[in-house]
Length: 129
Image (tube, rainbow, N blue to C red; front, side, top):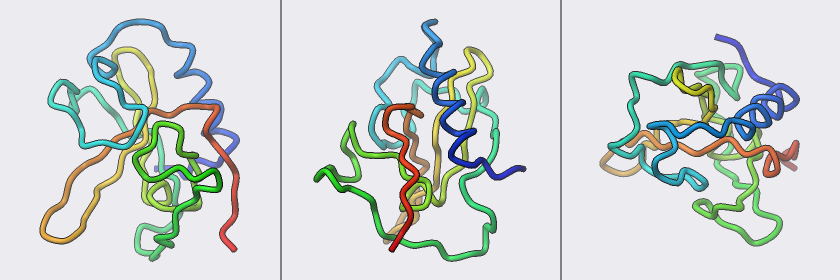
């Protein structure tokens, strides 16, 4: 599977934003990170690529929130080099073509697949210090 760079990610996000059809994938708001809802048919999502190169690399846990947002804010920036984006797959709905970000949150005593809509206006090409 291929690594998706910021320019291509932005293009996928713009294409997703242009989709207006109702679909199982957008029955519930996915503007902010959340557990994958029961209404989302995961068998209808396919991986389009990843936001990381090496799955064995240990990326940063630093988040990017220059405007005071937080992890589960609907307006939090999508910064591919920062957590949790640096652990994400980009998935595409086979029914409508929308793209989403998905990763496996593995903290404490559980793992949970989480998902967020890919929104072009929130993508930033920020670099960790």
